[in-house]
Image (cartoon, rainbow over all chains, first blue to last red):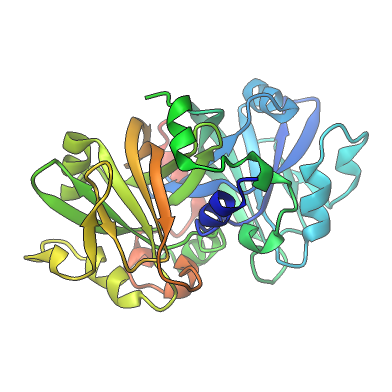
Amino acid sequence: MGEKTAALFRLISHGVYVIGVTDGERRNAFTAAWVMQASFSPLMLVFSINPEHYSYRLLQAGGVCAINVLADSQLDLAEHFGRSGIPDKMAMGDWRKGKTGAPVLGNALAWFDCRVSHYCQAGDHQLAVCTVVDAGPGKAGVPMLYGDTGNMDGSAGIYPDALRDNLKNKII
Amino acid sequence: MGEKTAALFRLISHGVYVIGVTDGERRNAFTAAWVMQASFSPLMLVFSINPEHYSYRLLQAGGVCAINVLADSQLDLAEHFGRSGIPDKMAMGDWRKGKTGAPVLGNALAWFDCRVSHYCQAGDHQLAVCTVVDAGPGKAGVPMLYGDTGNMDGSAGIYPDALRDNLKNKII
């Protein structure tokens, strides 16, 4: 269901990221694809997050995150952090604390330690607009592309069959 | 200058797009890389636009745009629509009018005809949050990746040398 629409949206290029969050005490991380640069001065990244997820609460409470870029060889990390409700989720990965306190993944391709500037609504998601406080390279490699992961996250079933259905949900 | 920082940010995967805008009378189009999906229901795309550009005025006046996905073979289109102040810019490309009235590029990989829902500030850019009204496939091919275009747009010189400089401009 919705596979044609999903295929169309897969032509919008996204990488695959594990985003680490903390409220100062508890830590968590989740897999995301909807990440992009938003500004040069200051350097800002923006990502789209489902506000129903546990990580969103930690993000809001702590106001910091680390956006870690996965390499094309790191599908295991993408899958692990794409699941919900795993006990001891942070046991996988080489984590350390960034300048902001956010969990930085040492074995990613690169990491961007960020402070959330503000949020902005976007349909069923929230855009987190983030100022990059610190960043650095990790291991060498090529970024994983979301379009190459197939239907890893089962999202193809979420897309509507017909785009005309999109207007029924319009928020404009 | 800033090449190390630019190389780091190039690990954030972006495609390359030509975004067509109109105020109902005048048309224009510009090359953009900072585009991503933002929502499933409704289906929304978001892109980051420099508010000093002419296209931003048309976008604001018309409230519509078509996000056209370039193939890896279409560097000529990316370069053409990446320039400012070209007379008769729309003479290049196979343009038609989408449902919203926005200029759709028939020879792109895919097109997304959108209505702007709202804007959101992000540093020196504005995020345009867009509801997808109509979309379709174009020619067959593989999406162009911004990271593969080298320094086509001269942006490497815009990145600061040291990330600590980023905080001097902080808007948080």
